[in-house]
Length: 76
Image (cartoon, rainbow, N blue to C red; front, side, top):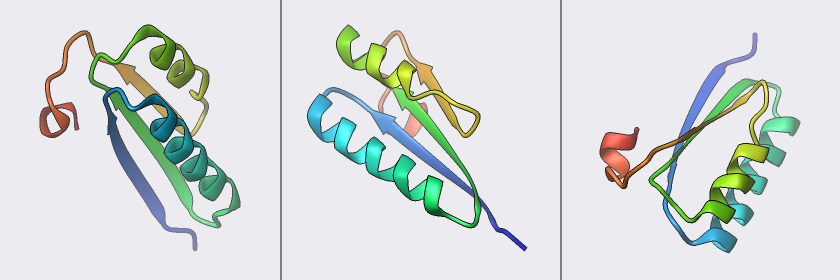
């Protein structure tokens, strides 16, 4: 039986590192035998990053874009 795994990933700036990290997580999710959900919560990064994050949205990737930086604890 597959395990259910939820990953919560707050983001804020650091666009290149964020792209590398999120892409790696999504690749791992695709190869996993488990039921994995990724929740990306962005703390009001620049528009270019928000656009890229929205493009990652899928059945297993939920993206929420906040209008202000509330911090990682409150974002999650």
